[in-house]
Image (cartoon, rainbow, N blue to C red; front, side, top):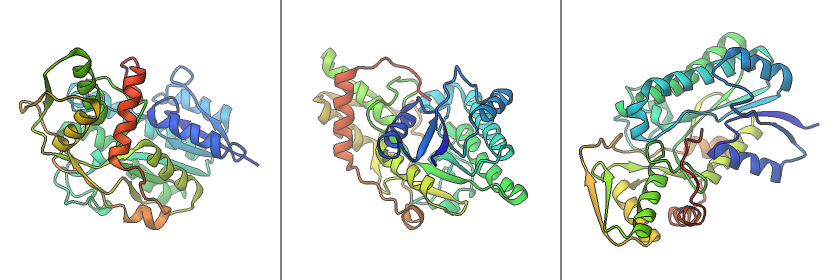
Length: 316
């Protein structure tokens, strides 16, 4: 008998890949429930209550998030905190009340303290305040781990909590205000080639490092969590490798065919200086290891952008 899986954020970047994977590989095992924002505003308790009453899910995978790059975090810290906190808290409360068997929360590497030693280990999550440019978003997500632990202690409600690093891949948001580093760089360099520009200006000084995770690898980590019984703990899902923004920019420029100048605007913040996660828990409990080489992943994403030129929009 197939399990009924409620997937929030199913129309977004990561959600579309997860749904495609489940439909292709596990169509007889899972019946998917994929509400749109028009169907249900998951920041509103009444809407979520109706969703659970009507859909009766056995499992919830909470992917929905209000996300963005440094520009988005600087402009809308209040919205990012409120939306992410309310979505997660209301969903978990409803899942508890309606007896959901398995609940998975997707956290963020932005929750780690700003000066976490490299590689980030999960037990360092509470050792300080997150990097200020994305702290409201990171703390809102980290609150959901506290909720999960409290609910397990008081109600016996079991859930899992995955910490994803910086995602990238085809179909990601390319809005320069809200996008993350990889799609933002791809758009800037590809557009510069098309428009014949000889200079591309990038934010910061290029020295920060990031742990980049290709979207299909993220899907593998989530599916493994769906299919395995593991204790509640934060588990890093990342590549376990890092690359500087400057080197990443050089790679993307080359793939895009751009050979002009790269200028760094240091009036903009670098954000957190270094990010690389320890993935030993993911390997131990989920048998997870990222497979996509960075060069190949960037090439496929650049090829998608050149081919599709999708409208710029915030995808959550």
